[in-house]
Length: 237
Image 1 (cartoon, one colour):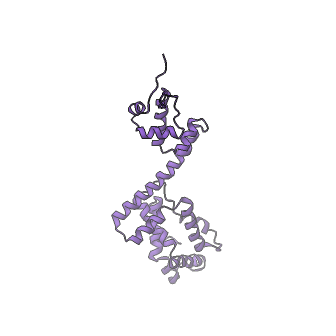
Image 2 (cartoon, one colour):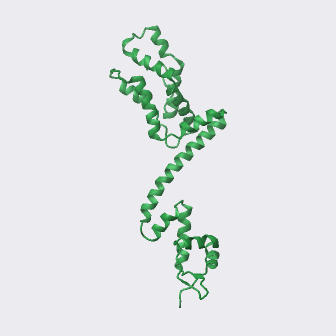
Image 3 (tube, one colour):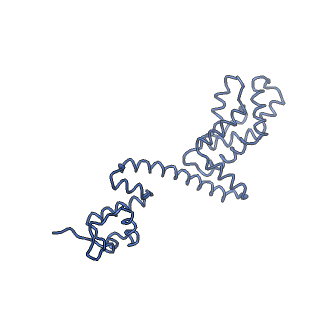
């Protein structure tokens, strides 16, 4: 018995894809006809049904047509394509989670358009960009100072925003990032670091710097971001 020969309309009814979509796939070489009628109409074999189902699945997973064609023509291994696409999706999911957290923070706290823009810009930074921002701040605070404890203190002052942050963590990160870019706060923390070894702990001006509410706020925000217990505000720097 001869293999069935389906028209585009029959394929459409069997797969649920539109005639326009199937014709487009055929024109692009993704679905090749197995023959034509005497009047020139395209006909497709039974394998076209399975091929169209695979194409639809891959499209729903977000693969572009050029990549799908390579998979169908065995120019690219499907597991390799799937792994690459999975990595891309994971990156997109991370961005979407951050955006979701930013929007929830906006609805909760109420912000100006300028604050919303700043929140979004800071929240969407990549891990590397966040690291550079914090490294620049810590270098401004501790750079060139030789106290042996500063390396450990700098590490303890480094925020690590998790991959799927809670709204509170995004909120805290945005505020902390704003602090690290504040020249006055940087200068305050630098003076504190410079006086850490030299000033006796009974030195009242030094203690005034250590008790600055901005420094305490930084530690509070850091604890929220890193999921730590509330900090001991008396610890210096």
